[in-house]
Structure formats: structure tokens, C-alpha cells
Image 1 (tube, one colour):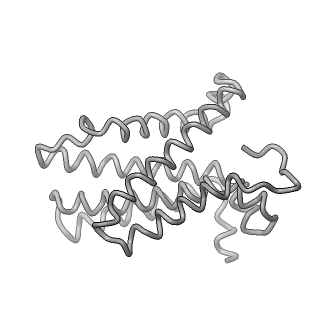
Image 2: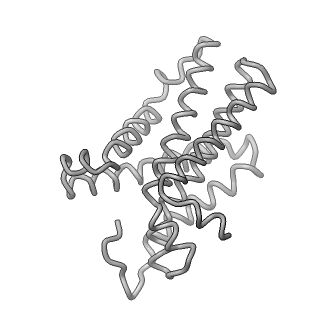
Length: 197
């Protein structure tokens, strides 16, 4: 547990990137550079992105429910968890591109909702830095990140729900936690935490 708390700020992004890149490379090394490998990588990066997204998405909700070492860590590192999720989804895009190159399937052209999700991820990533955020303005920043966050939640929930028939054991826990995370954001608390999105 102490090791986890030593991961702060950019260290979270660094080690998340190293871990995801390593697993991604191992998938390709173990199976070869082919369609099957890239589809495995797509599934892996979708799940790693969802986990990182959930940690960022739940940070303020869990902190409002109680101040603990874990909830404080999540809240203070929410930005970097979000940036790590963007990195993970960057690898997801590479895997999708791999399938597109090796097959005639155009997953980008045919999936407008996923494309919009990437637009939100790019905009939210850019405006996670000081100067772009200042240019956007506080009110617009909050609108962008709130709408983007809920759109990504909807995208993950829909995508994983569609795959319940494929593997109930793998995807049901993701869907259940996504729904719980959404409900948590609307649980009223007596003492509202200030400056929380």
C-alpha cells in the first residue's frame, strides 16, 4: 500500500505508460504481428483505459463520502490518472490502426461514437495543462471536462455491455462498477467538499 502512495503525479503516468507499453509489446511478441494480436491488444487497452478512467471518475465522489488515505490519494492524483487513461487509449488507437492496416475493416470510419470519444480525450488532455486551460477559461473547462467525462462513461458502459454475451465473467464486473461509479456521483452528503468537480 505504501508503494502505491509513492506513485504520485507524473510517476503515475510514467509507470502506467511503461506497464501498458510492455504488455502491448509482449502481446505482439507472443502472438506475432497479426490481426489476432492487435485484437487482443484492443481488448487489453480497452480494459486498462476503463480502470484508469474509473479511478479518475470516482475520485471526487469517494472523497466526498469519506476522507481516507486512499480517497485523498485518488483526488490529488485525479489529473494524472486521467492523463494515464489518455495514454492507454493512445495504445488502443494504435491497436485499432493495426487491425485496419492488416484487414479491410475500417473501425474508425464506421464508429462515429468512438471517434467523438477520442475528440473528448484529446481536448481534455490538452486542457489538463495550465496554459490551454487558462485560454479555455474556468467555466468552459468545467463544461468540457464534465460533458467529456460523462460521455466517456457512457461509451465504456455501452461498449462493455455489448460484450456481456461474449464473456459475462470478464465484462459484468466492469459494467457493474461503471454503474456503481455513476450512482456514487449523485449520492448526497451533508458536508460538501469545496473545489471538487
